[in-house]
Length: 280
Figure 1 (spheres, rainbow, N blue to C red):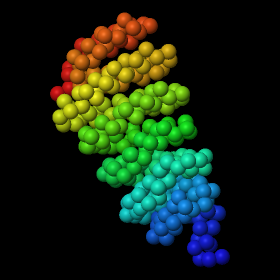
Figure 2: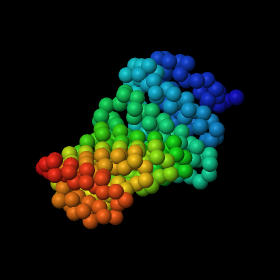
Figure 3: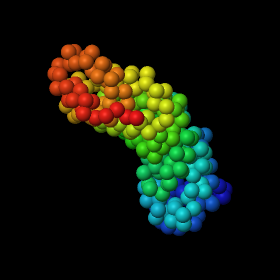
Figure 4: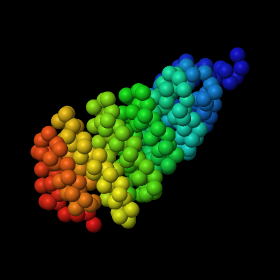
């Protein structure tokens, strides 16, 4: 067995978590080996095993790979060379399973609390396009985690996201409001709340007017959803966005209120708009 093969076999065969804090000292060896072993050309089963180990490690990053506070030096390699290639779409069940594993790793990374806000923004800059694509995966879990990752990205970025990039996000989230899974629909609604908060914190709100108006119209359709939990979630999204262009929202609501099976939610929304001042 060659030295490289022995190294790969060692990582694939023994849980990295068993090394605990020692992993933080071994990053100069561990990260390049992971990068080599997790390339799309490598054995799929080995990649799935390694991604599973990496997710577990990232969930306890402070006690494992960041035990020495050095993980940030390898963040670009992890995002660009390890995660990004595996998030790209390729046909087949195995490729889909690898994308799910990579999304799980990204979620573990962004929720591990070892990254600063700036580092999360750097990850967003690299991987947001791929995560918007994984919102379309067949796997419910992948779609759900993707919504949560985007929510984390948006919460961290605040109003700092480039306007053109920010506008590309909400249509993908809107699609998930038609998801077969209510969990995904609720996660999408929560992320839309955060998206609207970003718009409220951005300069030049008039740039977003046509997009927000379209969002109002689509949300008002879902406000008449058969599921009460979904209606409640959508009402919260509309309330969050109501201060942006309140006159627009009132007109859009009054245009459809008679089409809803019950006017209750529309009436609650209109009362809210009247009570809350417009966002400056």
